[in-house]
Amino acid sequence: MDDAGHVSRKTVLRAALAAGVVVPSALGLARATAGAAPTLTPSCHDGDDETPPQIEGPYFKPNSPLRTVLATSNTPGTPLTLTGYVFGLACKPLANVLLDFWQADDNGAYDNSGFTFRGHQFTNAQGVFTLTTIVPGLYPGRTRHIHVKVQAPNKPILTTQLYFPGEPRNNTDAYFDPRLLMTVHDLPPRSKEAAFDFVLDVQQGPPGPGGGTTWTPGTTYKPGDRVKYNGSGYVCLQGHQAQQGWEPPAVPALWRPE
Picture: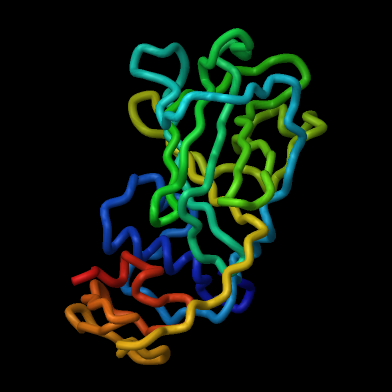
């Protein structure tokens, strides 16, 4: 939400997805808004610039396994589930984005001979990713952090790190950047859930409607309303005012294909 109290597109998207589709619980951590989707703003007002890069560090290894689960119930450490979105510059989610994660184990050690606590994945059609892991341990000179490389299809790689709030070493780690803090909540009895949204330097122009389109920007739609977009039919899932960038194919939480 910006200084004038306007709700951002990303806020509305999180609220819409939470209300319209089944998503992991942690997706509501960062910006979920209860109730019906408010009028959308014409641009992104979350105060988010592009996600800042950070150093790769000495422990990156290419060719990590394709997987979203880096830890099981028997893995030593505090279980952690990290979820979030990857957005472009127009605050619209990006599908098929590569995220390659690596981190230390509970003792602060990296597996440099194998691929323990290493894995890559891709965002789904809604731009969502989920990582099941543990809270990484500490080692000399660093606060707790998770490394990641993020790459949209045919775009440059963003290499960065994610941090945990409330860590004493955040004050002394030379690489710590508060813009890269995750939102972290405790889950009884001993787990944590975290959320973080990446914003990539990817231009996202509004798609123009083609033939056979009855969907119209500025129209207020109610649940159950039916429209056509580029010849395909859609049913409204929740009330909202249509605006450019929120065409039925782009926001599956608001529109269901017929």
